[in-house]
Structure formats: structure tokens, C-alpha cells
Image 1 (cartoon, rainbow, N blue to C red):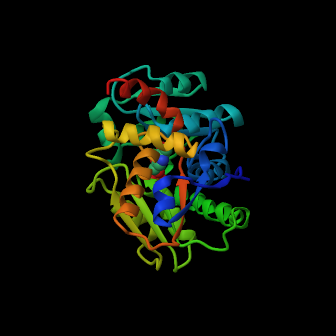
Image 2 (image 1 turned 90 degrees about the vertical axis):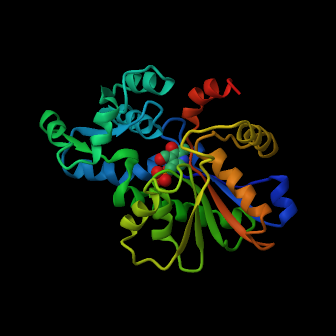
Image 3 (image 1 turned 90 degrees about the horizontal axis):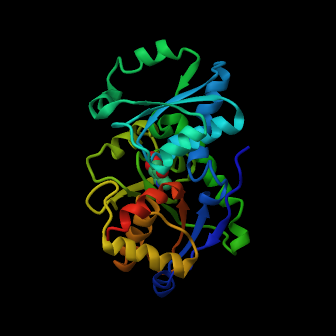
Length: 302
Ligand SMILES: Cc1ncc(COP(=O)(O)O)c(C=O)c1O
């Protein structure tokens, strides 16, 4: 059973001015450690690992990976072993220190070694070394990851009346691989749109990934927009200023890689007149606040 995320009205002056109503589904609040979309993305993978009798899981990510962070804390809490294959060379980020504290065994693959993760024989040596572990794709993605995210839709629907809504028109959320968006599309009905604010620029495979998960037979309208501001993890003064202002106006914490960029892209869309007055959107807060510790240090440079 996945923890229930609260659905709250998102109060921002530019929303009020445009007559567009947004409710925010606070996945960041479901758990202090297994936060955001991660628990949803992992749920089917972990169930599959259990079914195969695996003793634990092995997965991949970077030195700030929200995915590995959630996986390692789940392993510690629920008592299964975890191995992380990391991009690049050993560094001690706050995330990496947590991974170690949670008991995840780490292997640094270098950059070329990490790029090889899509090659056919990539997993062979790791399977030989850890036959008792179940491999989970990068970011908890794939169809299994998306199926877990379908539950996000139900969680929001169950709470519509609490905020005085009887219906809604669509979804807005940050996308990295597009897995979470694909999960919403799988669970949604035809008359609603799902808007994905991409944290990576066009051409990074999000559209292909979503299409592969959906299998090309969905009627639901979804749209991917470039919200990356020049590249994944690129931050600039306008973004940081916008995040600080939005946090104080709404009381909702945001981080600069995913959720901050997604809210900024929403503001641009709303101010461009993209949505008619009276439109009701659900914004999914996908978490990621643990990664803010490193970006805070980075942002101090601005
Ligand atoms: C905080 C946060 N939001 C959004 C995403 C994007 O999710 P997806 O890869 O399912 O598109 C991620 C990472 O994957 C994330 O860590």
C-alpha cells in the first residue's frame, strides 16, 4: 500500500490573475526518505524482485540520484540489500554519503563505463557477480515503473472533493525519462491532457521512452515541453529567483532540477494564454528535495 500524498490548492498570484486553478499533489510529503515519484516508480519493480525470490536489487544513477537515494533507503527500511552502479568517479556528495549510510554497496563506473549501460552485454558481469539481486533500470523506469505511477491518478481523484473540485482538465509534471508521465497517461481517460515539462532538452529520448512504454495505442493527449533552460541540471539566476519567490508565495518547497523548472514552465504557459480561464490542472510535486542539498551549494555561486 503506497502512502497517500495530500492534494492542496496551489496559491500563486499569476495563477489567480489568469483564472487557471492548480492543485498540487504533494508526493514530496509521502515519506521523509522514499519521497516523490520514487515510491510509485519502484513499487512494481520491488514486487517483481520479491516474486523472483531476489535478496535485493541493483540499479544505476548519478552522484545526486534521487532514484538511488530512495532505493537505498527502502533497502535499509525493508531489509533487502542494494547495490548502486554510479556514473563517473568517486565523489562524496550528500546523496552518496546517504547511500553509504543506508548500506548500499557502490561501484563507480567512470563516464564511458556508465555510457555503456544500454549495450546488450552490460548486465552480464553484474548478473554473474550478484546473481541474487534483481536489476532495476536507471531511474526505476520502464513499463513496470510507469504502472506503479498509475496509482498517482487515483490518489488525486480520491481527494478532489476535499479541495472543492468535482473534476479536472489535465496534469502538469516534470519529466526526466517520462516514466511518471507515461504512468499518468496509462491511467487517465481520453478527455484529459498530460503535460510533461522536460528537465532535459529535446532529443534526449524522452518522447521515444514514453512511446515505448505506452506501446503507441493510447488515446490520451500528452505533450512534452522543453523546460530544461539549456540543459539538465543547468540553473540560472532567473530560475533561482523564481523558485525563492514561488516558495514564499505558495509555501511549497521546490528544487531547481525538476519541480522548480516545471513550475516556471507552467507560469510561461499560463502567461502565454495557453489555458482558458477556469481550467483546472493537477501539478504533481515529484519530490527531489534531497538533491537540493548539493544544488544549494551550487546555487551559492549565483
Ligand atoms: C524529483 C524528480 N522529479 C521528476 C523526475 C522525472 O521522473 P521521470 O523520470 O519518471 O520522468 C525525477 C527523476 O527521475 C525526479 O527525481
